[in-house]
Length: 635
Ligand SMILES: Cc1ncc(C[n+]2csc(CCOP(=O)(O)OP(=O)(O)O)c2C)c(N)n1
Image (cartoon, rainbow, N blue to C red; front, side, top):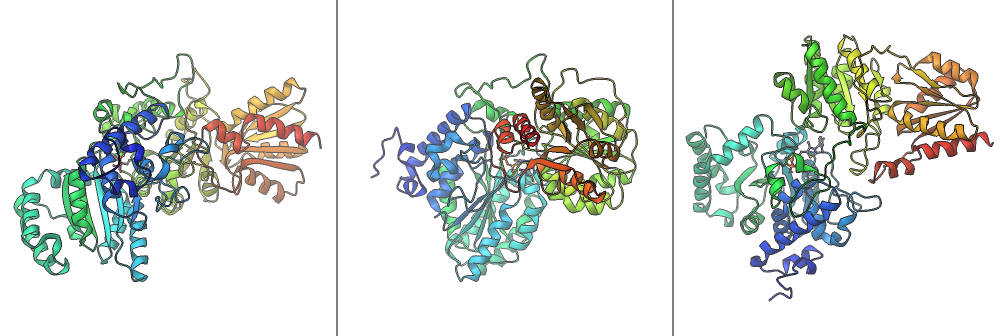
């Protein structure tokens, strides 16, 4: 007998220990209550909805069967782990998710002992889990299971394959759960997705396979002995039923499934069986993204992260820009790319699985044959683009700034070294807000600046973004980086006639005798606002929009260094090695002794919160600039 009322099962659950006290029959009700709770909280506090709704049963089953954190559990990407947070001592703080000071939107090692490994960027879970499994083995412990949950989208990332290749050559106690909902953020792409459909739909193959497995003693026998006969039979079966070998079995990872991943009792039964087996194994489960909210089930792309919505009807609160207000940089990028693709047939678009996020879905509608969603494969996206450029095409390869960290060697080795004219568009550059530390695009200026042959541009506004895109497609003989922020721009009438931007040329935005501010990119709008405020108090601030981090406009630097004692640089990136550092290096190399103050992000990881809160926290908002100017001038 358990002590919970039917009505408030979730109320009595604070940790996995409480779930284990429930009877199996109560688990479906718990799942319903967890799902309802997530929907009610997310309706008001936007977050990753659809993925988390799809994994409720899996989470309950995993915590029911396994002993986390002694058994380790890693959620790949981690955007689907909301029910895990709710069920692991964080239910009461759940509504603080993604807010400043609140719970992180992703698993975080510092946040809870149940978050065995932090995630946010995809395809890391199998590697980390294997590392833990092998560490356990070295300690002489083969008892605990090391579990990773990875989506079919994240399985397309190269790291996942690298880890599987390694895992199959070991005998560690590792369980990979492939959470197959048939969709990434956008529609699934690539051959792997088709392969999953094939093995999923080959029901006869799976039925016969399971029968043979059971005939051979199933989970009760030691797995090593029958494995070879079993594998041999499977090998024979595969040619009979699907004409394809099982990819995972070929890597020596025992494959189970597919099973119904939204049926908690089926999951519990299967996981209990799998718990008894040792060695690397993979369970393929089929789930419904958005499960339990009709609108999310029908439109999982929009409901991946739907913003505010009505918890009963699922209706989203409109997030479209009000008439007469600026639109997002992303939409300006997408629409401009289409405009340019119409006049230049050599333009192609490349995205590693962020088709709608970066608004390349506009291009795919008009030019499907010239748009390439390559899956969650940043490294491949860059080298693939390099290949296209080497063969006469003009690739606009759009990668979120923080995900570009994955493709660093490809930028250096495949693009910069060969001076290939790839146009690398860094979306979500700078602080991104609620997604937090894993997603802030604050390192790119520093890590890009040190690479020879790169030209690096950051537009102040939408018009500059359009113009640099226009300039780039006219024909450049060098790789170009364009970095721009997440969210709304500044100009309503952004669709102006295209103009060519002179490479390496900045501009003076306003004159002023007291102090000079050098800005790079859209953060310059904070400088403009600050200068307007200071003007009211009689302080005259000169502002220079440098546009290019590399090559930097030395004529502006000379002008400023000769004219002003005090110079402030402002950027939406880390202080070390960034734009301000470049200005200081120039001044130092030329022997200038001016006071140069950097306003940039200090040397620490920045958590989640709203963009304006984080800008304040990092002191790169306009008010902080006003205070800084006053402080300097009062010295
Ligand atoms: C390296 C990296 N690239 C891109 C992303 C953005 N991203 C977050 S979730 C996601 C889709 C994941 O699909 P899947 O694994 O199938 O999970 P689902 O949302 O369908 O449950 C993508 C592309 C990321 N987190 N990390």
